[in-house]
Length: 450
Picture 1 (cartoon, rainbow, N blue to C red):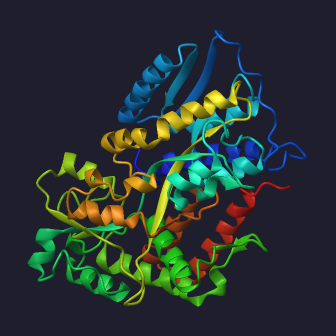
Picture 2 (picture 1 turned 180 degrees about the vertical axis):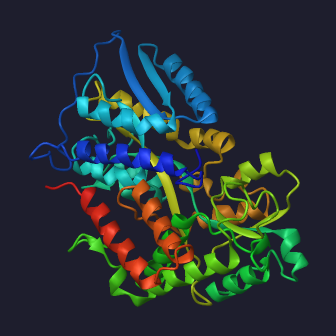
């Protein structure tokens, strides 16, 4: 699966996910009344005696290439550990969340020992007492902090311990169709000066005659990613990294900064004037040569190679809000975690590290287009074979993680807020206020009460 939600979800899939997510939230909140403090996790079940067989269950949502890769890891791991069996289940996306919720609710014997969740849910699971930290005998805190890019493990840390290791690492960048930019007299390799420059280029590249659209200047369809990068860019670059959830109130800080509303309004205007929701709906407009630019993940390179092999394109960093500002991108990832019910914490963490270590990351990159989270791989020549790859790998150095608390609900609220304005004609401030109010409720839902 592509990172975050670059794979567009249908409304039916989204609603089904959200229903399962609500169940997962309820399960995550079912922690002991007094969960063990950091460094005092519940004792694991005794490791099996030497020679005794051990089975560890591992679940993740299905992707053919990823399932095949895990099967390869499984075969090698079992060869190295002949008494261990990895019971791997690759579960269809539409079924994964409901099965995970019911499994965790049932606990030991029904819940997976190792499983995959998006980073926006990791903190909730930690707070709910459902996860165990990385075993120091397998991978130490010092090793994690030395080897992994800080932003890729940040959301899995609590009380000086790490509760997950990252996979499916991605950033956000702008893709440009070389021919369409050159036709308009623009240099596809020239970076944006600022947001105004991005807007002006998008308008120049848009071809609309009356109600008919022949070409969009910017594909803005990844609404949640657009608003995430815009809001976080402002807070990270101009407000000294201010988190967008105030820990004192557990609410969004959006209303504290008028610039955030202005960014929402700017995006709605860009989406209305340089895009068209009714144009080639449901199709990859950039791959078809009908979108001059788009915001996407680096994994899209693999998709374009398969679907539009002759398309010449250039990847550039996202535009600074103001000229001269340091570059910024929002980074996303998923994590492999270990449940508190696992029969052998150390072996479970050996499996997780086996599939996420440096050598494994080379495999994941080849198979799924993942970016590496190992610091020493960022400048490795094998990841920097052309200029587009250089831009992609550089983005890992200036990213910070998406700050969603929860997951699919943000996709819905960001998308609905845009649609109310661009399609429904609602006043932008009214839509922005509704969005913020609804997201504060999402945050409350995903906050585990101590």
